[in-house]
Length: 396
Image (cartoon, rainbow, N blue to C red; front, top):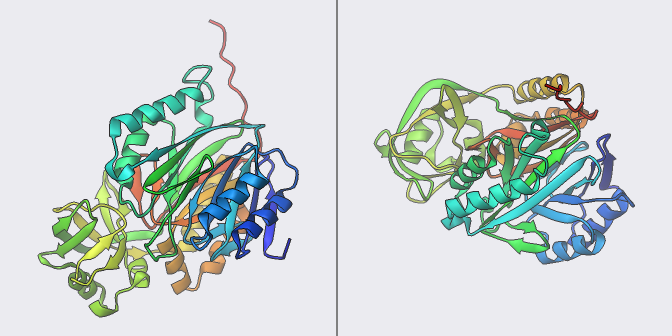
């Protein structure tokens, strides 16, 4: 095991491990050595897109033959030791204290909503042998979705509808901003155009969360021409979209880049709250591709970034107090947040928070929170240190 591979054993029994080894087989071998002989029931893995998926899949099966596996490609990872630009991040769940079931949803680009809802309901029933209210407050769902299928809104809506109140968080698989190939793993197979859903019930207290670091300005854009299915906005305020956006933020339209989009996010107001609608890229025709669907007629608001370290610290501190101490956090963070943190030279501050609160996860092409697909957000599940007391119902 080289210096680039580390493991953390958590009080709840989960073990997290991460490596920057460049070869897939070697990375898995070093992770297995780091985790040791612990009895593992479920692996959740996030890995660099330059790993050969078949080689990684074979290695996981060879080193963890008794564990179920789910995972996806990432645009960078993070761990209690800080950020990883590349490598492998593993979350190993024990059977004791956690009950996990999972499924894969294929062909999400042409999703059958009713069939998807039926599959989720069936999965939910396998987790509820004692009735729908048993340990309900200690259940959560994790979603991993192909980030290049542009189907997250439909997928998340169908899943959330069928979950019947079980809180959902997750992330869209990335590929280092190349937008060429995102991959998911489930059940020993490789999947594309797919989503993986895990339902978890635990003996430990949990809370899902979302955190962002922007506030709305007075600058507004009306989407006057768009391709909703393709997530492309052709016109803002009846002008070419890229030109209108660049003029509003004081940039040269020819110089727009992912760093520009991270520094000057756009947001939409839903139910009195603002949610980011991040730009993926500028297209040759002057249109803008987004990470979320944007309908024609929608009003987008230029957002102003706030202190990302302070906002993240406040949310993690709130969770720490609410849970009586955080044991670990499984997080899903938009890759644009990392770019913004790097441009403001505060990534070290984020890394220090992740060390303090044992945050592990990956950088995404979009985040899921309850029934919504979001951008430029940090979502996740925080797990407490002590088993939650079981409520005893008084005899009537």
